[in-house]
Each structure stands twice: as structure tokens, then as C-alpha cells.
Image (cartoon, rainbow over all chains, first blue to last red; front, side, top):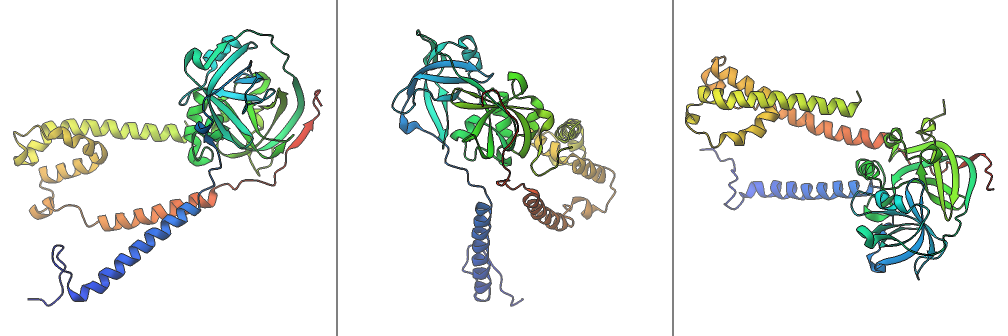
Length: 255
Length: 123
């Protein structure tokens, strides 16, 4: 019979094997901890975006403006949302509120929902049905629309809801499929500029001439890109009409 | 056809062939190569997902046993000799894929400044 030690799971480990087993166990635990740390350290900071349930439900009144994504120019705010602010609107899940907002385009409406906030950017996830968006009476003020010229910007196309805090991370390649699903569901797209444009880091991004973001641009979502297009200030928000044929990876020369 | 469509098409073709193999193997083949399975039917649907994935191996084993193409013992020996190589190759591939992914990952071009190409009437 061989004298070689033999490990049996339900018996005490043979003396000569104990050192080996302890060394393997320590190495495995150390390697796993190291791998976990490296993977965590390699991730980008997800940013400070979040649902602000702590603010409670917010209800304000303003002018609905389809650009073609729905934004609200606030005419009657509250202690958190000031008069003169403009913000984008979305619905629960991966869907927008285009169907509800379209009939109210250019009209005064009362909106109610939960705010998503990421630094200077915020949008509102509206309650369902008329509780979230309903027409209201009152005089409709003129909303200033100021063309700001054609700009070349570098940054990332994201879906506005996840970026504002619905997901963490709400941007980057790991989030690309989610972002495209949100955009397909009519969530407003946002461009994150590498540096502020007229004081704004986040711009609502659309297609040329007030059209929706073209499907061609979806392939570029979540990548760092450079493109050109006209910027218009509508109320308090900058809208960038991206030209799809100018989109290229950041750092690549234009053809 | 882009890469995503090609991947989906390849998976669909693989799955359709796997389904055909599953039908043939679970209705005809299994009775011919495993006498213990004769008359037992309830467990067979449980094999469908596995057959969809590894149908080439199922076909190869079916042929090997049916045709007595290998010595008796070899026919019933699991194909383990290549497992070690496959495990090493897969481990190396995972590490290589992670390194390749990290190396081609874009870095945030923080120094790229906005450039105004033309003036707007609102300025």
C-alpha cells in the first residue's frame, strides 16, 4: 500500500497536505480579491446622477415644446424648480411621453413626477396618464428661441434618462444597448460635451431641422465622437441638431 | 449584413440544426445506442437544450457507437483528453479578450474643446 497522503473530504487533512492546502486557499482568496479590486478600479466613475425620491413628487406648470422631444419651459415653479427653467420629460421604464405631449405642443400644461438629477442636468419622469401631464388654462408666454450658430462638439451621445440617474452607470460602452433601447422608446437623447458649450455640459441632441435623432446615429451612441451641427437655445436648454454624416470617432481626422 | 446580424444568423442556423438533431436523436437514435433509454420518455425533453448546444458532439458520439467505429471501451469513454487543452485555450482567450478590450477602449477626450464653425442670429 502506498504511503502517499490521500485527501478525503470528510476526514481531517493528512499532515503533509495541510501546508499545500493552506497555501492554495490563501493564494486563491488573494487572487480573487486582487482580481476584484482590479476590475473595480478599471471601471469609470458612474457619476452623481440619481432619482431624487427624497425631493418628493414635483408638480409645476409650463409650456410644452416638442423639439421634437418633449421639454417643458416652466412658467409656474416651486421651491425646487424655478420659473424660466427648461427640462426634458420622460415616462416610466424605457419610454418617453411623446404621445401625451404631442397634442399639447405649444400649450400650457401641468406636469407631475419624480426628478432625476445629475449636476446641472435634470429631467422629470412623469406620472402615468393625465396625472402626469394635463392641459391647464392660462396665458402662453413666448419662449425665446435663439440660434447660436454651427458648432463642432466632441463627447458622447447618451439617453437622457439613464444619464440623469436612472442607471448607474448611465453612459459608456457597457451601457450602449440600454441606451439604444431607451432611445428607441422615445427617451430624449443627450449629448455630453467634453467641455462646456456656452456654459452647458449637457445638450439635447436631435437630427437636422428639428427631426428626431436619426437611426444612423444610434451606432455612435456611447462612443466618444466628434460631429457638427447647429445649436439653438430654446428657453433654458441648448438643442444641438447633429449632422449624422459628420459623426466620427473622437481623435479621427475628418474626411 | 453587419456583424450583429451575422452573429444572430449563425446562432439561428446552429439552433435549427440542433433542433433537427434533437428530434432525430430523441426519437430514433437514443433507443439504438442506449438500451437503458428504451421505453423511457419523460426525461428526453430535458436533453433538448443540451443537444441544441452541442449537436455536433451528439452526432459524432451517435455515429461512433452506432458504427462501432472505436474499440468498445473507447466508445464509452468520455472525450476528456481534449478538455485540458480546451480549458487552457479558453482561459487564455478570456484574458486576451479582456486585455484587448481594455487596450482599444477610448479615453475621454477631455482636451477636445467645442469649436464654433459659424455665428448664429441669436448671438
